[in-house]
Image 1: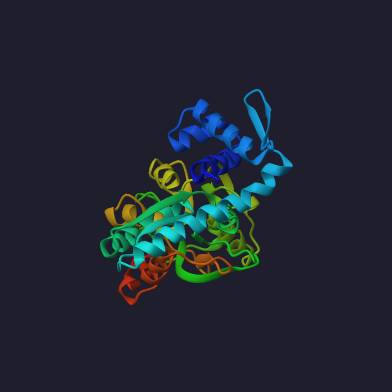
Image 2 (image 1 turned 60 degrees about the vertical axis):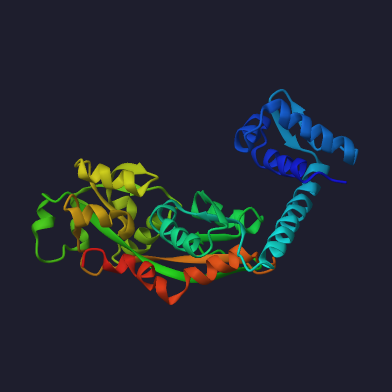
Length: 311
């Protein structure tokens, strides 16, 4: 009989391609991870990893086992949840993949409310890039993904959750902050800018918006690129440059007066944040509860958060 714990260790080792890192994630020693992998290999009579010093990589048999092992573990989890649900409780583990912005400003509010209703639900959030969040959903590593990227993957269904504005921010003592009328798009060429990294939703929205005014990112004087909206807000406060950021990430600083929002004539930028799930996989009770709670009328205020920034 296969040992589910050994299968879980195998999956994490396959994801990390490093027994030490797998042990760190599972709170096991590296020898314990190696021992469980060898036990699984002995039982299946196959070699699952090519080993070369500290480096490992999956064999053909290992690659074949990964999806089946994930499926077995998910079925075991659903079995336990179904039995528990007969008592009327929603229980189980919910894995969510999300980008940095949604992971910091949206998910905590949703998860707090969900757990007030269903305290037996445990949530694990994987904060990563928006493209990686979708790949994790596709590969069965998460149950739900929040992403501004909408890739046409087979069996992945998207539902718009909120529209996040992309706004221009500046220090409160900047001349534009005291200007009562919007600046012209060409005025942007006069300032230093801090940008999000290529591949982010903010970067993509800004690139598209500038193109409508016959401008490009290459026309901007970019002095710094950062992969975190909160870090960008801090850099703007320090006077390093101006920046276009998610309205959600700048809301608190704008309300406190440590940042100012600048209007740009004819430049209305936004990105839609989608909630996505894999339609071909049976949803767990915890996943269904989270989805229903996220879109419940009582959470309309969360879905409206970005539109209220700067009002």
